[in-house]
Length: 321
Image (cartoon, rainbow, N blue to C red):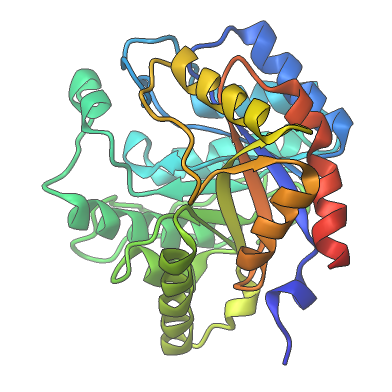
């Protein structure tokens, strides 16, 4: 039986926190991820800091990706994940295609339902009546974006939230119609995972092994219901990762990074990947066997350059086992 491991290469990426940093540091870390040989590079999409004090410095997502696209040469780029509520989906599609062209076809379009009420209230952005409504908006948005990226003309159905009217875009994605992949983050079992099954080329989740296994099972059920092969969706996993030769030193580095971002969170042995390449590869293999072939290291500022440089070795170890 074909598995995700048969379909997808083992890949490693970095999610660089865009809060509590300056641009020079953020750009330098992005260039390092590119030259070190990582496969993907991700940024948040928030208007206020989501860890610790919300008034810490933070950079906007799509403009960060556009700058990274010009700063890097080979690494994939995306938001982990974009807040659907922030922008009209037509604008989101246009931003994604622009980054795709700047990067010569390296963009991912990441989207989620949005969850951080503070920034919506502060900026006067409609947060909806609840998470269920925001997920309905997400489903409608992704359906429209998918059609636009495929070169189709989109008009909203009666009663639709967005009111598209003969929406059509040029240019199309860098590699042609329908080639810009969509990444959806989240694990909502009734709505989010159904949207993943209908439209996404990538899915991102974070959680313990048992919870992640359940979400993957639910996604398979939604895929069956909509007639989609679950192997068409790359499974990605975000984890705090710190690579060191000494595990205690790795834990110290992880905790220091949290403290620098005004976070009370500290090392969680059930969910954080810390230690040597061999130790982390062993932990990742349990998730890889569930289909998660793409590990994205959650890296706060000040950025852990040693971990970024060592991450590609994980790919080799997991691919060999």
